[in-house]
Length: 221
Image (cartoon, rainbow, N blue to C red; front, side):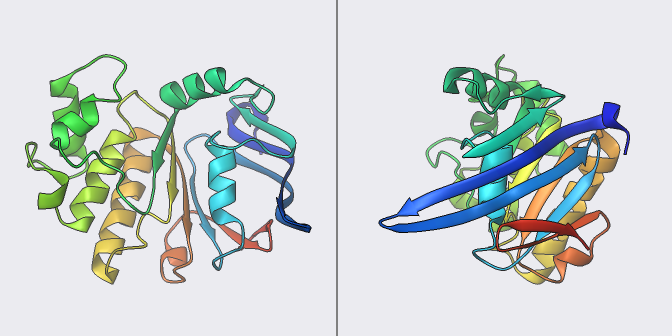
């Protein structure tokens, strides 16, 4: 592995929760590196730690122990305002639900998080993900189209790292394939580093680095 091309690295990462008197090890000493421009599918059953992994990688949560390095810089000990700045400038997040603002259209949902408001750039991004009904409200979109808009939104600030937590969880089989193929195309054409979680065994067959997750640990497939 070329250390100069590591985009995101987890070093001895643990995530431990307390539930009353019970201790839950959501992540157990994760050591893993994601190469720049790689396409990664994290597969595992519900409760295996996939969503926790995405939140840790996306700087939404701090690890209990360990380091999260982005482009070689440790983020684990940064104050939240600096972590938020890294998220805004470097990380695009896509979730199972769209999390779009329901009262504004597709273009406005993209321009709202932009560092510099740019309608034309929003249209270009929407075109890249195969969506051109710019003025549609979220309630007027299919679930697949909602996810396309969310993927476009994840790139608005020239993000090079896209984290997608169960992005196909609400989709039918063909729709799920469409979204996976879209993410693959963006990975190849835009050189995005993409990390996807899924519990769908069919989606784990797509080309990419296959990472199996069980009981808070990861292994290559």
